[in-house]
Structure formats: C-alpha cells, structure tokens
Image 1 (cartoon, helix red, strand yellow):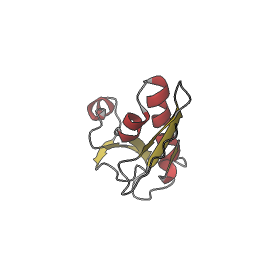
Image 2 (image 1 turned 90 degrees about the vertical axis):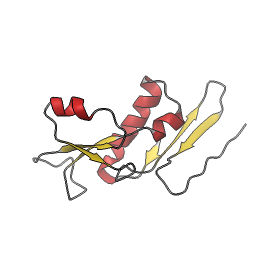
Image 3 (image 1 turned 60 degrees about the vertical axis):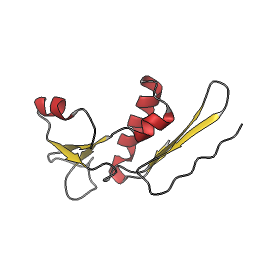
Image 4 (image 1 turned 120 degrees about the vertical axis):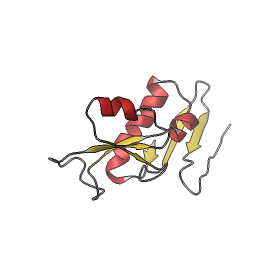
Length: 115
C-alpha cells in the first residue's frame, strides 16, 4: 500500500488496510471508496502538532457526516480527490497471484498483472 497526501498518508493507508483486511473489500473497492482525514485547516500540514481544532474532512459520497456531527465533530465535505492522495494497493491472493488497483483519483494509473 502506498499513497501521496502529506499528513493524510498514514490515515489513508490505515483506511485501505482496514477495508481489505478487516472488511473483506477487494483492493479496487478499497482504493475507490470515499475517504476521511483529520485536517487542521488552511495550512495543509501539522495535523499531529496541535493544540487546535481539527476538522474531519470527508470525501463526497462518504456516509459518516451525520454520525460524526452528532458526536460533536466539526465535519467538512470536500470534492472527491481533493487532498486525499493518490493511493495504490497490491494484494497477493490465495493462489499467489498479484492483484493491484490504481487510484481513480489520479489522472493516470497503471496496473501490471502476472500469472
């Protein structure tokens, strides 16, 4: 698993791995799914260096907005691909085949298949 995204990188990788390993999604489903990130505002970096209010940014299509707001989180909706990195993921399936997915948020992407 790998991604661009500055301070969002560990958050995105955790989401990808959680979707594949805990939820059983395919690598393609996991990479294409809406993402969230903790974001300190205009600076774009410094998420881990508070103290200041951190908003939870959700990509368009993410289903968690109401639940997070009910729990007191400041939630912002953003366009898909807006600061959420370009992730790529490769998995070795039960038969030993490599299965990969390139992020649809990127303008280009390549997947190499081996048999």
